[in-house]
Image (tube, rainbow, N blue to C red; front, side, top):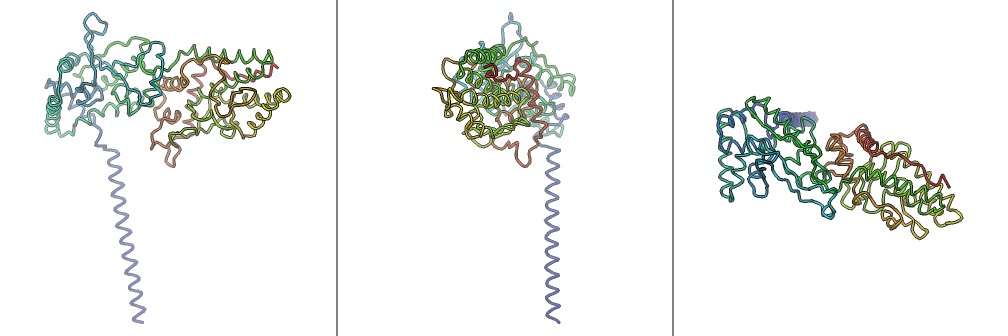
Length: 487
């Protein structure tokens, strides 16, 4: 009995120890969750409105070079080191100019991708942009930029600006810092649904947002509207603050060189289909088929923004013909470009028409081109790529993106013009940057939109498809049935 009682007591003791261990572990987890939630609510990297008020008040009551630079850092979303760096260009128009009295930070963006450098300028558009700074700060900043500052001088100015922030912190109990001040504009844009691409254009973060930046044409009016709106917000916090920006000139744009004229895009698709029908009437079956492939391929590329590296879109199994979805997986650069895209209505209908076209091609070519008819059957069975051109009386599956020379009209721009056109359209209509990145395959390595914790929903893909549909309507593009129906 004593042995049994001893074992029973030992078991109870171990059970009690285990329960105590679980309780301690549970409390530790609860404290960790509480700290995490507190940090989410009180992010120390962000400034409160009170802290911004204290900064504006101090710079207004204590005018100096340090105050001016801290204020300009807040407005431009740039660190003082970046503002003073010689790589940050600055111009101030002379008096007769329309924008006399204002200053402009010059943005001359290097391309992150080498293929973007190999382009002939489109419509004379410049890759160089001019970001205005308020008239109230232009002269003082111009005086500093006109002096050749060495590294030591820049560090002394930065140290003086930090000393000003320390004085405010000691007096007001704030936690101002150069990094937090420069980050405030991004916080403002996030809270007011302003595009990160517009923010990146202002702050010079071309490499951080290189995909969206380099594919976009920026309207100067959009940039000025952001800065004006931000200035009004700052004035609401401290009414004595003033920021005057120039009146935007309509039609002034800068950015991507690959966004073609929309009339040229419309004309290209119109010419393709007219040529396809004309060739079909002349019983030139192969030219008609190639023109229709080019039309369908162009529609699908414009509807998805897909820049393929191997074949166009894979075989028919990559498409959901019933609901209009497509699985894209044709990139050498990594799995993060795999995505499922919802087709807009025009592209979905065009896809259905093209499958019907392959069936017509198979029946029409059965006696004259039996090899083509046989390959058409393989396409319908999912054993060959859906979209391929015909050369020398045979499908060329190895290079389906290379149209036969001399047969088709010239593209309205560079070979990936549609990606630049799409990204610019998304920016103009205000589509959320994360949705545009996901749709275009521009996500970073950790932005797995289809992961277990993705916040994207079916409605998001339908929202993007609706935006693409609006672009198709603007271009006057519609789904066109097979030209072989007229044979």
